[in-house]
Figure (cartoon, rainbow, N blue to C red):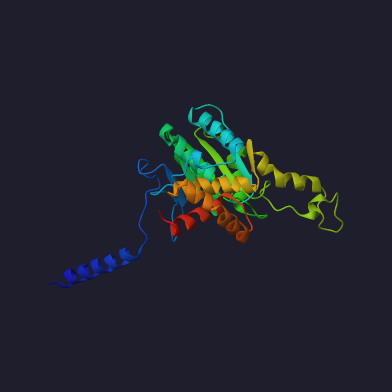
Length: 291
């Protein structure tokens, strides 16, 4: 074997070892037939971001969501308008934790996926790339909801202005096949401080127009055309949700009735009567009491 052959063999072996530790490569544009939901991902070590298909999409349906009938009707109607090519609004869902905000968006995806609806989940840290996402899907025939979960900002974060521009503040028109659905525990998405209510501040660095500062903080929320508010559940509502999930896990009516006291104790221990707590209780109870 010549020295050149030896060198080539060693080089090939080195390349194989390097390839083994490198992250897999993904095309920037995915195979759209692989899923109805996607995540926007950044490549490790830099490089262009890409859409990653979600292979196991939540199967929750609108019928699984109880005691939020008004919110469900409004977002279902808005989404139906969107998939039918009619005017529709970006949606902000705010309020108590565990009351179905994120689940409602996932249920809408399942309801309208056969009509061409697709979901793209974007982390808050990646919102600065919203314009790239919109450009990527603008020519597609599907209808895309960009989903931002548990959204809130601190002052100075880059995603704040990017989201404002994506909603309606840019020089280019909004793509008619893209809407933004966001959930948050804060209605105004930015922290509100006592100093914001002051009519003026003394000192060399005081804001000369504090009212404008307050307006800036609420302006992002106002760019969402539809606001849906969610509230803590009453005891009967919580028990109704727990009963629904117990039934979905195979419990019969007698087991559901017997579980009421334990369901209330479970909620008391967690300090919340939310839909999420009811679902967690039902999983625990059904697992401990198989038929």
